[in-house]
Amino acid sequence: MIVKEYIKNFEKLGFGMFVHFGLYSILGKGEWIRHSAQIPEEEYDLLLSEFNPDLDWADNLVATAKKAGCKYITLTTRHHDGFSLYDTKGLSDYDAMHAKCKRDLVKEFVDACNKNGIIPFFYHTMLDWHEPSYRLDFKKYLQYLRDSVELICTQYGKIGGIWFDGMWDKPAPEWEEDLLYAVIRKHQPEAMIINNSGLSALGALGHIELDSVTFERGVPKPINLDCSPKYIASEMCEVLNECWGYGAEDICYKAPATIIEELADCRKYRSNFLLNVGPLPNGRLRNIDAATFEIIGQWMDIFGKTIGEPAPTGITVTGNERDFILKSEDGNYYLFCYGLPSESDPNVTRIHNLDYDLKFPFSSEIESVTFMDNGDKIDFEQKDGICTIHTFPYVFGRNLVVRVAKIKPKN
Image (cartoon, rainbow, N blue to C red):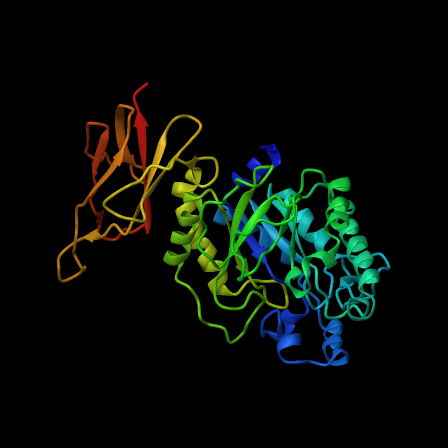
């Protein structure tokens, strides 16, 4: 099996921000509103005269991602409505250069990423509700798509990858994937090529040039690579509420604790976690979006070193079915503990299972087990190749959702 270094490096990024931003943001009804509400083209296209993000939209977005511990950001350079955030150089007049802003927003995004050490990734739609050739002359459309992808591969320096979406709209053989992916390999040979399998085919392998499978809003799982000639990564994309693009009336938000658990769940299978935001029309984030990323950043400040390089061990932990163990290249292990309670007066907290034991096979002799957040030592025993760790609750006023303990073997 071929193992490519850029794919392994992608796995080590661990956590990224997904950004759905475009003309649909003005309407505040999600990224599919033109299709779902059957808005006439001439009416929808009037949004061009309104689309004018703040000059510092990208700087603010990237700053939020960086503070949260994200290593990369995937931006919708063109979504299904066909509008491009980049300068299409004459391929179309349906782009940011012909909107009110008259600016190349992808360039602003890439510049902000490069200034802050964040890796830019580009989402690009495959289907297109605006381009006439998509309906009338599909061969011509495919050339338009490839020309568009060539632009984003050549105008912005080195990028981390391209994330395609929408191939489910037509049978796979019609898309001429060989030609499409060859454009990327020609100009960006180490860019990740990802094609979202959607909700219907979570984790499914695809074309040989694809470098990662996707788990859209799903629980990652081990990938079966028995029939794959190369090593493949995985990524799970998640949305904070229900809409990927800004939904003014979508207040069905997930709790930050749930999001932190999902981030940890992904790393159990070395899957990256790509968490979405839908900026307001001016490019700013809703307060709740920014605040959620800030809370995740608090967790990452403490445990971030475990999200990235440490790899799955396959060690089965008993005592709590969600707990798992990763191993880092320096030989240390990291035990992820879910659901530890807080200890206090029974009139203040719901005390139950204050202390419970975790057991797992471990052949090396252990020197110490400590919680990473405050260095508290954890009692443990080793007998007959089984390690037993005696967990204990948080002090009242603290709860880190998923608490990680460092297991240090003796040299």
